Image (cartoon, rainbow, N blue to C red; front, side, top):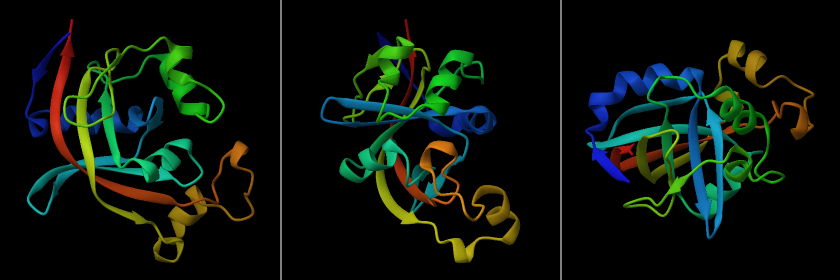
Length: 181
């Protein structure tokens, strides 16, 4: 499989448009690989370096893996939309209980710079290494965001996990490409 090297900012519009519809955030520790759908993220610069910032709930398996190995890949579908099956499984099941890669029949391709794979079926890939992480603080949120995304009295992580905050991971984009073939 020959990757086509890309300049990430030349694809920033495509990434930004796909993100609210769901892109994949992939992590790895040892042989354990997890991928999940994210809809919150942004491409930009920090400290003069190209970055992708992802927001991951502290209740997610991907959060646990990120805390152990602070590298990730962002996997963006070329047509701007994840397949219905990928969106359904990677967006609603936990890597604690499911091997989503196997269930979906996804093809992993070794990362070129980071020790996290790309996904052939979701070929636009940003390889990222965490430069900065920060747990978001509810006291700093606007009231409308608290009401919509973090309602009170929600404690069961299996039915929404709305009480859990997000960690913001700012990952330097250390490689970027589109998987071909």
